[in-house]
Image 1 (cartoon, rainbow, N blue to C red):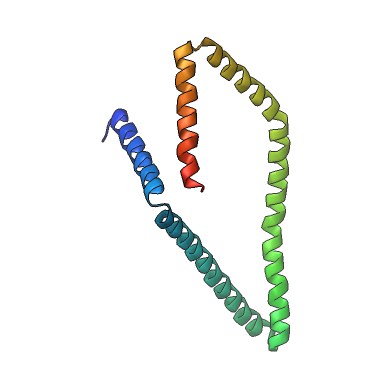
Image 2 (image 1 turned 45 degrees about the vertical axis):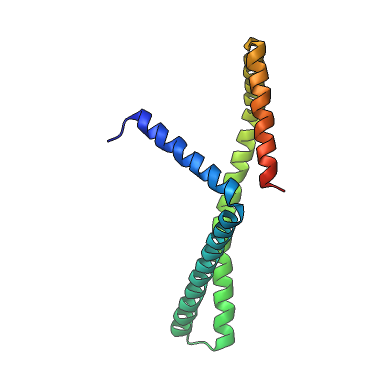
Length: 146
């Protein structure tokens, strides 16, 4: 079992390795990420085709229908299967939206006050350090997005 200090060192080390890899080989990292996303879409498509084929066979066997009727029934079954979770997702997102609408202004004000107080309590050297670090980070990030 590792200590919390060692865990933080490992965490920050992995983050630093990720940043260095992204800055030194952005094409390789982005290519890998695109291939990973492509793999998941292919997997999703294969699962969809499997479900559709299985439903086709079940409907054709249960109702003894021809190809066109089977496809029509399966289409409406799949629409129903997709619309029900989307409806519940919509209701959940509405609740989340109204909760965020209620809590975000207070959170924004609180964080704005905290940042203002932090900035006011910094010494001149501390303010210069923050400005230099921010400018350096923006300069380094500009190499990633060119």
